[in-house]
Amino acid sequence: MDCTDPSLFTPERLLAFAHGEPDEEIEPHLRVCPPCANSMAAYGTVDRVLRARLYRVECPPSQELGELALDLLTPEAALLARAHLAGCPHCQAEFSALRTDLVTDPLLDLARRPSPFRRLIAHLLPPLGEVTAYTMVRGEASDTVRSYEAEGITVSLTLEPSGSGVRRWNLLGLVLPAGDVIEPPTGITRLSLRERLVGEAPLDELGNLVFSDLAAGLYDLEITLPDSVIALEEVRVGPPEDGVST
Amino acid sequence: MAGGLDVRELARSCREETDRYLRGEPFRESFCFELFRRAIVERDDAAWAGIHAQYAGLARIWLKARMDDDEGVNAAFERFWRALDPAKFARFGSLAAVLSYLKMCVHTTVLDHLRTQRQSAMEVDLEAVQTLQARDSVEDVVGDKLDAAELWRRVGETLPHERERRVIYLSYAIGLTPREIQARHGEEFPRMDDIYRIKRTAIDRLRQSAALHDFLTASEPERD
Image 1 (tube, rainbow over the protein chains, first blue to last red):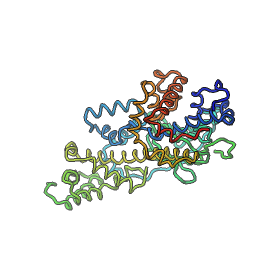
Image 2: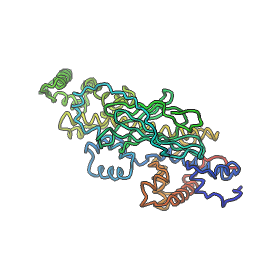
Image 3: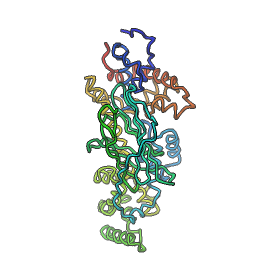
């Protein structure tokens, strides 16, 4: 059985919708056209299978990145690892974090018996006008950039829709260091929902964080930096009409 | 001098010298270094236990609470143990160099923990799709299949054009959306339409491939 009007939507457009691109026109059509709905679902499933199986398939083991950072790889292995690094943002972020972590003399870490991390509660800054970051699913709502601040460190968060027709979201963030510090911060971020850890992600080389495919809810975000933990409490994920607000 | 001591004396001297270091006094690193040498080069279990006792606390500091303390520290020490052999150890000229390697093992243990979490999230996502479609168990679809490297090899063989392989690599191995591909690789792929067209062609080719048929079609929904 074929689509009643194949001129309406190209396979590319079905694929785009299956991969989460908002498309207000296609959704009503999918409700009445099983062939197109099946095609879209098939694209979506293949997409998820390939994503689950191929993600970082060519990335070297983290240990190899560590040995590269310590200059312990053979010249041939180092060349291969660097060639991969040049095209892989994930390994670049990991390598950058490793180099930062390994730059200090480990004996100094012994001397610096750690003070417990300072825990800073970030506060939400007033919105800077109507800076629309992303239009939400089906144009029902829009989300502005939300900026938080703690001791000069700024965290900006935006939401974007995720998935095909499913009401889930990606949370994107950028952590900017305080004052005249130029280097992006390094650290680990943790996202929790009702005190249950949903995921962890390192800040990338530019200070970005991403949590994908989140259900709506009020989340707590913790950003562990080298000398402090920044807590963002009750970060709203989801459209305003779901009844949750920041 | 350190070479003549038994492991118990070495461990005690290492502890005392470390305390001197922490008090800011002159200290000798040779005892701690020798303890490491015996553990790694001579595979001496008692020396290994001495190292663990002396440095597990430091490993915990390096872990920065990014994963369970005991699990992280034990995994890092195991990694350190497995990765080093006498030849590699011979490249370390100081205690600082050995400790840097241990520190690297702690950090890469955390990285692998994060990689595994991310992978698990994708598996759960896939499982959710399967549940929604009331299909076979996810093990039938995902587990029984080719490992990732073998799948990637077959994908490479199935796609005849470099641009198709490149878009599939950027989409799935790197995890970029078409919009991100255009933003980051605009010189190669200046038009979104092209990226979608290439990706769609490649996916259709993969779905039609006999080598990948079982792998991909087992996951697709029933057709009307």
